[in-house]
Length: 282
Length: 275
Image 1: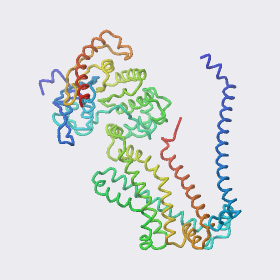
Image 2 (image 1 turned 180 degrees about the horizontal axis):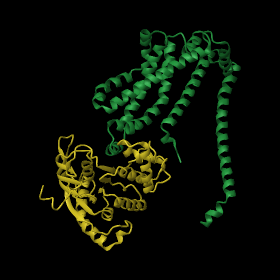
Image 3 (image 1 turned 45 degrees about the vertical axis):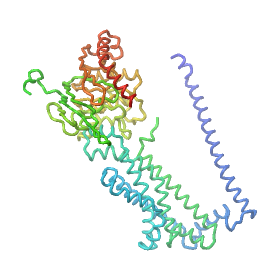
Image 4 (image 1 turned 120 degrees about the vertical axis):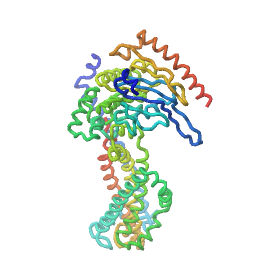
């Protein structure tokens, strides 16, 4: 006990704490500066080569003109109307497709996971549909639903549904048998088993699929817009491509990746909220 | 039935009558796990069951819990034929009892919440049990934040809060290190002595069985395992599990039962090597 007290005076604890804090912030600064160096190296050389005409600016554009293009779009609007309209349309399509896809996927995954007969009957058909490259459905959806939002939503739904479905299905199947038996002995009826055991257990699987499924909802919206639309970021990129405006294509890409990053962040927040028990660490 | 009544005023808590359990293998052969098991466990009795690996100890437990039905014979609980899940029992499993997405207090109060007790009452009772198993202050922790021994304490509280008449234990402590195990065994005995539950304790560890039980049942090696020996353990209670092993009477009992068990372990070992 004596050794403990001599080594752990308030003062010593404070200095050690300070040291640890300094070390942690040093590591943080190092990582950040390395990240910035990589950024400068890539975009700097791009800018440099393009500026010196070593690579053709017509085909490869340059970071500065991309930034200029985005600023111009934001301030003056695009040739196809104000930027925010396109942004909002794409975002709306993505979110609606995502929500519908997730709901259908969870319901179908739960139903098939719980019911062996349903799984046997529908399993092969779902496998078949999943094997189909879903992008080829875009033309058919445009014929069915027109150039507006519904065709893009439909495409996004077909893309998100399967990811969520397979995860929900697996989640329901993978429930620990002991935990099920334990809940049964403690007196859980069917509904309570679902509420206390099956759904929380499947939720970890479902939530981990949300990251990729949101990405796919965005792919659905943008690809749908490429193929036929009158609004949206995909439409904007397609227009820029039609006018051989490389800078416009890149600018559209930047906007898309910003959207995707924001969505990823939102999904992470959702995740920590719903499966808090996984993230709490001592 | 009437001839028994003078000897046993109440019907036994657990009564296995000529129970046989068979499984149909994919090859079409019938695999007999248990054959003609006759076993009675009285109210409040601590009964352990030992036997070599794969002899059907866990199958016996799932028959009593009602997870499975016997192929032949019947399982009676307090004189009533068991159908479906046994509502008088709860079980501490070898692996995990606690639901990882629930905090300690949610886990412990679950049994009460499931039968419709209000959240306030359930939590109040849960707090009492959490204190009883020595986890006061950990109410808001999640299972993965606790050590293996603490998780077993949660499991015990979770099982006992519903005041089951039968406590099933399926190698509950076998994953713990030996000191934690002794601690938990003592804890179990202390809490059990306050309740009137019958305990059905499965273990492969003969010392553990003798140290804890009123009665030790030896099963023969599987397949088609049946009861080989039935020993009464008349060691004094309360017992200290870690120290009772040095008792002379303990050593005698151990030798006696081990003579019985050894042959079965050899049989099971030989058949495992031949397979």
